[in-house]
Image: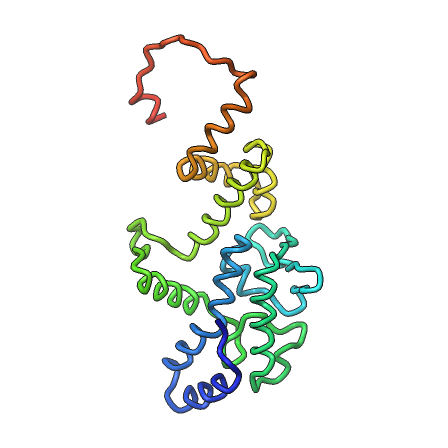
Length: 232
């Protein structure tokens, strides 16, 4: 949800008089919802998302160019119709903010009420508040809870599961996902095979059905040391 322009102007006046606490509050209800939708719907990294500029977004072709990437490889990211509508709504309200050249091609897409790009601290702080509101454990001190990067993991697992459910072999789908996520090699993407099979056990059963003529079932029993195998 985006704030109406009149509420934005009122909030800007309050921010001027009451300081950065109010500014952070505004950002949470203005730009962050759009950002979180981008992260979940595209799987891009947080650093890539907050670096997107207006010129990188093409809503006519429903795509975004990611230029500032971890591995220095530009990527073209398609947008779903629902995400495109979210961005259209965000831009409609953002462009009405009393800021100079807010829609200029070289300006950042996702901004704070001051016109500056969102900081990673603001994004992480806002996401932590969302998790707390939903009673979802938050990752802190490597506690194993959810974090902002969980949106990227979720996108990867859901995408891999969808491709397999539509008939694609999981190891044919893996290179496609790897390129989309901007990984240098398949090694960084292989983790999602295990996560997908853990979350969607039927995926593994489907793959066994597809490949059973290659690997026929046998009744051979071996004296495999399970503990040694698991720790290999």
